[in-house]
Length: 89
Image (cartoon, rainbow, N blue to C red; front, side, top):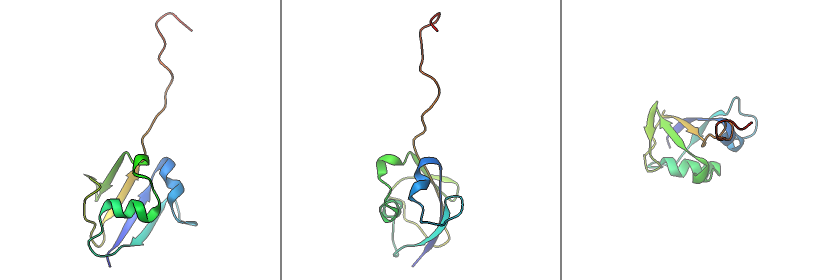
């Protein structure tokens, strides 16, 4: 069973197991598991994932995870201020 190191960022950090430090933890997965299997295992809805990286490279949900992989999961980011027409407060 491969063990992968996972780091969850921003709002998806809430899916980290209790007591993990800074959203970083290790997970054992069945052989042949994919990134999408990791999302399901952690209870992360795919709509809450904007981008994931495996070993620093952008990864798709169907990427197979291997022993020692390092996975980063990022949510969609929103923010800033509402655009207003010029000249309006």
